[in-house]
Length: 440
Image 1 (cartoon, rainbow, N blue to C red):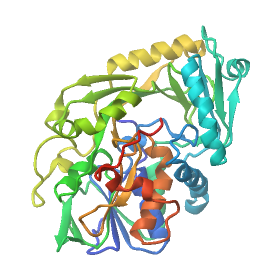
Image 2 (spheres, rainbow, N blue to C red):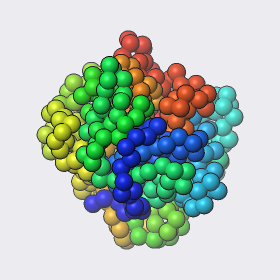
Image 3 (tube, rainbow, N blue to C red):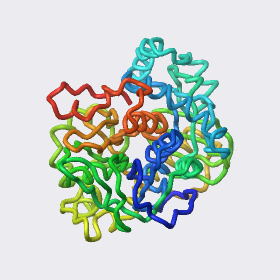
């Protein structure tokens, strides 16, 4: 079942024109709409389902610099600062808390990787502290485990996935943005290879600038306009408990990850466990992604199911005058894996007996969209003037979301970018550049 997400109202009137149309109402689309509207541009945010309904409400909620790929670190610093500013700008709580994140491991290789990452951390002034075996045991007491050590990322934090994107989208409305839910963007109106408008199921919005922040649907949207965007999605499972004993705010161990929500419940998951569905799009891009999957996913299973015939990676053309795949699947809501739910509960309760007998409030599946190097694309789309992309976040999208949205807004508005956009250009994946797979 879908996680519970804060619902916001839609603007009834579709504008005839806008300076920018943002396609996709996840954390990236919402934050980009906010930063574009804040600088005085007229913005229409269109979402085929409801704001925050897909991956933006299905993640752990971690907002971190710890263990980031160095290409993402400048952006993660911007994102953390922006997370901390939303409440005062909007006047509503987006659920962000700078609580620090705690990691512990009994795997010597993992500990060595964390230790090696400190060199990267120093270059970017990241406030991180290695924990001794004794400190790790005191910080994360786990039944039957002897930690070799750990990490305390002191300035990192967590957000609240159930409320963040909707609250920020509502904040964009305060600056004049309009929000249109259950309003799928079917495609672009192009004139001489340049954007002239967005064709939605409810009518045409004239515009010369479109930001596609469509998550797992981005490649399908782009393909109809001849824009190649290598993208693959893996299916993951998480669950939320009912409010329970307080073990800490955000904890990672090799067996499981726990994030305490504002109401005292926990989001529980296993890092690296995922299902890779065999799909037409997946087959098309398979050779591009093998190095990344081999490195990143410790416990990937392969399967074939409904996603071969329906959803963002299925075959089929898009007809801008008829209902499209975007309307046929308003919310990408894959079923959770029962086996993974059982494994999560077993691991968590064995390590943390205080949670024995904890009740599950809900569980869900989610598609996490990856690029071949596990670094986002935030870039103009080569070949279509006026189209910009912000997608392929590779499991980092929520925490990095405000930074990605801010950089995307800078590019669309032709303002000085908040960080160097070169590492995030789409062309790096297409021009034969050597692909360096990013960090977890």
